[in-house]
Amino acid sequence: MIITRKVEFSASHVCRIPRLSEEENRRIYGASANPNGHGHNYVVEVSLEGEPDAVTGMVFDLKELKDLLNREVVAPYDHRFLNYEAPPFDQVVPTTENIAREIWRRLEPHLRGATRRLHSIRLYETPDLFVDYFGDEQSSGEAPGSGEAARSNEAKCSA
Ligand code: NI
Image 1 (spheres, rainbow, N blue to C red):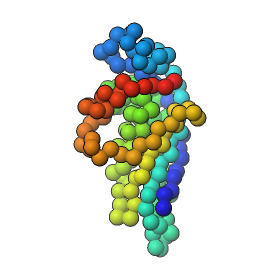
Image 2 (spheres, rainbow, N blue to C red; image 1 turned 90 degrees about the vertical axis):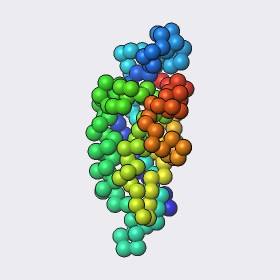
Image 3 (cartoon, rainbow, N blue to C red; image 1 turned 90 degrees about the horizontal axis):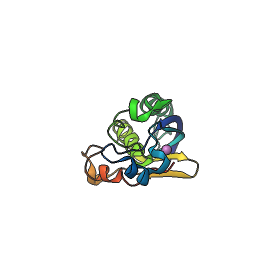
Image 4 (cartoon, protein in one colour; image 1 turned 180 degrees about the vertical axis):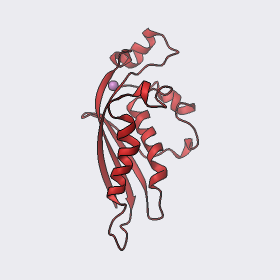
């Protein structure tokens, strides 16, 4: 069974790779490279997979999940300029992809259990654009911003 809880946060970001020129950043990220940044109303859907507890009937305590999302996602990101206020986005380009991966990294250790696990993070940057992240076995132990993650930074930044 999969249960999903949704939270929202509003944040600013700018998509730039500091070592690249202005022209190259504009080519890759378009208007998203504007150094003054721009905002999004992000929506995060956190899905857990597991079996309901025989006694409580719940996959995970929903109050605990709400508190966890407030602590690990809303508090650090809401009304922040991600590049300046929310590490690792001072080092890692805060694309939708990278933000989803970081939310997974923050939440996953708290959601491991004998009867349930984190299934996916869906992050909407706009109503028309979202990413799904299911964890990444191959890069476990690899910090965001290194290796594949760094190369994927150059993929896109939508809006
Ligand atoms: Ni954007």
